[in-house]
Length: 104
Image 1 (tube, rainbow, N blue to C red):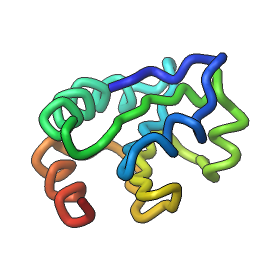
Image 2: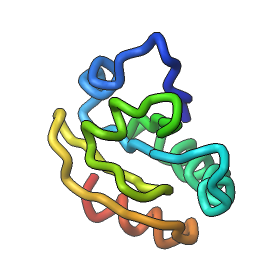
Image 3: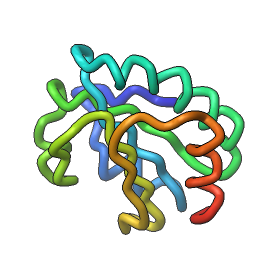
């Protein structure tokens, strides 16, 4: 899982891959902290099929606004620069894997 840096363009990173999983979180968010290792493990297992990017909504507020993020954690699955699925809130690893499998 890649952590978006302030100097990077989220749009550029997303456009480099057919599938991208965007993980919007915040350092102060307890459920986000719980989801981080889950998303990291699942993204490692599926790294040949998708690119995972973690976005801190406080450091990248423009990106959060652009994607309409109102709550964290939020997962957004993007295919060819189009949002194809969204999941708000924490979910267990098996459920996350099943959710991703239905789209990629």
